[in-house]
Structures are given as C-alpha cells and as structure tokens.
Amino acid sequence: MNYPVAKACDVPYRPARKQNNPVVKGLPLYYGAKILASCGPLQDLLWSNAGFASLRGLPELDNNNNQTYGTPLNPHNDRYYTGGSSGGSAYAVSAGLVPLAIGNDGGGSIRIPSAYCGVYGLKPSSGRVSIRPTANLAKSTAVAGPIAANMVDLEIGYRIMAQPDPLDRDSKHFPPPRSQTAIEAETKTKPKYLGVYDEWIASADGPVREACQAAIHYLTTELGYTIVPITLPLVHSGQLAHAMTIMSEAISGLKPTQITQLSPANQVLLSVGSRTPATDFLQAQKLRNLLMQHLAHLFTQYPGLIILTPTTPNAGWSFHPSELVHGSTDANMQIRNMEYVWLANFTGCPAISVPVGYVAPQGEGRGGGMVPMGMMGMGEWGSEDELIGFGYECERFLRERYEGARARPGNFYREGFFAS
Image (tube, rainbow, N blue to C red):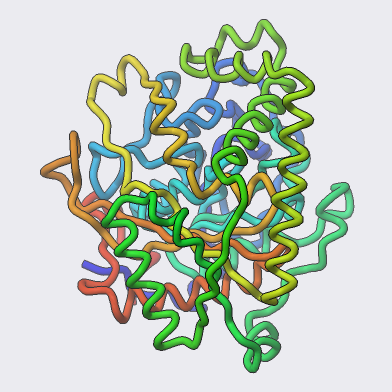
C-alpha cells in the first residue's frame, strides 16, 4: 500500500510531535537522559494551528539506542534502528501517528532517521530556526528542523519554524521564508545544477548508489537538471574535525558530575570530547573555514547548485535483540553512518533528505520488511526554499517512476492523515 499525497486543505490543526529536547510548556524535558529529567519548561512553544500529540523518544544525547527510556524500532522492519537522534520523531511520522514532527540535527540527526524511516527531513541553515529557550549543547553545528510524511507537510513545518525570532541573536537576521510560487518564477529560466563528487559517492553500498543514480537519472532526463562534477577537499579529515567540534561543544554544557549519569557508551564518547586539546580544536575550525570557502566558490561558480549524495552510505542499521537490553556502541558504524551528513552541520549549509527506494533487509533484519534508502541534497546558505522545491521534484520520482511507488510500513498506525 502506498502513501497518497497530502492535500492543502488538510493543513489546519494538524497534530505534530516533538523530539524530547525542545522546551514546551506542560511537557517534561529530558533530552533522552536521566541527568536532565528535572528540567522544567520555560515558556510556550508557539506552533501556529498545530497541536502537540505527545513527546517522542529521544535516544540519549544523540545515540539511537536508549536504555533509559526505550529504543524506537523502525516501522518498516522492527529489527532495524530508526536512526538517531530524532528516531522517535521519524518513527511517529513514518508509522502514521502524526504527519509532522520536530527534530534536531547536529550530525545528521534529522536526515539519518528520515532516510532510515522513509520520510522527508530538512536540516536548515545554521542559526535559521530559533530554539529559544531550549539550551543548544552544540551551538555551531546543531539546528532544529521538520520531519514530515510528504513535502507539503515538510514545507508547512519549515515555514512555521523558520519565522525570524527577534529575541534570538541568529534567527532575527534571516528573512522570512519565501513562497514556492515566487521561487519557481524566479528560477524558471535559470539552469539547475546538481553537484556530484563521484569518488565520495562510490564509497556507498551498491543498492544505495543504484537508488540514488536512478533518482539522478530522472532529475536530469525529465526535469532539466545538469550534472556538475565537483570535488571536495579533505572529507575524511573534515568528518573527524566535525566530530571533535560537536563532542567538545556538547561536553562543555555538562557538569563533570553529570557525565556519570549517562549510559556507559556516551560516557566514553563525551569523555573523548573533554580531552580535546585546544590546539586541535582550533585546527578543526581552520579546516571548517577551508571547507566553507571551497563551498562558497562552488556556489558562486554554479548559482543554485545542489550537492547530491546518499543520506547514508548504508541502507539502514540492523541490531541484535540483546542490544535493546544491554546497550550498544559501534564507533565504526556510527562514523560510516555519518559519512555524508556531517558536511552540512560543519559548514552550516541547509540539506534535505528524501526517500528514493527500498532494499531487502540484511543481517539481523532478514525476514522483515523492506528497508528505505535516502538521498540528500545540500544547498547554499539560506537556500531552504530552493531545497524544498527540489524535494517536491524528488517526491515526483518516487511517486511516478519508482517501481511500486512509495511503500507504507507494515507497522502503520492509521490512514487519516494520508487519505487520498
């Protein structure tokens, strides 16, 4: 069974679900961890005409496996993770509980769960969305954004969330989002560029590469996009520099006594951040500057360029049932999982993840449902509106060209929000 497309008339009073770290009056705030279970809400989070259905599970401090409050399971295959840290948000959307959810992304935490659960996720430009009064433990890399079942809802969520906040030092400097009608009129006669770094994409698993290539073929042959071969310098070192930066920022927001209340895996992870020499941290920021300058050159040379990669190089992440009880740590898989997503966080660029297909499950997940795969488009700073237009075009590919169209997960709760 497939997902029908949402209607514009369905918009008013649509319920939303939030990741458990934005502050909302009347709801407890945990960040998925015991150390923050006593944090109280500070003020109302205004959400237009949408109402919050409930909290959803947040894997403790960006690790999808959460022994404290429970681990969300992928609605397409319950022997696969949903991806972290916004895995509960992506689950709620994919399973039909809500059409829209809020996530937070410091290292792919909106886009990875969106890809794993077969939904749409947008990581806005750094500073674009105000999360005041919620504390941001990774100010230079993390940003809030929407996860949605379709592009209509993703656009609605973004336009509400991205209204400038006059009390936020970053958000107040951004203009309000523009309408898709204005964007289409402005870009109608302009060339549409897709930046592809073949050597980087080649490291993805075969089924993921094939799914992305099929989507790219559709975009170039039927929608007028032009492929631009590009290179990106020091991507391996850049990923390590991003990891060093976000861990150092996260640990700086916690007291030493709070570290012991985290899961063992996260104690080790954040302890690494606490031991980062200042000289190494500064070198990481120099590399960040180099990458941003390189991207600025590409965006100047090819206006409107969207850099394409798989969202993750792997199709999902299966687990053994014992991991739900005893926890799990797999640094190699975590690094591979983030192979493409880190760049948007480290440089502050906006990026969108769209579903592009499904593959048979592997490993512990064999025998379950098909596993979704995602493709990511990263644009110039402030180009969220253009990325949303790109997302609509990718949605057409899945609906009109992908064999079998979009798959509804076996663990689907209701049809109300997706009825044709």
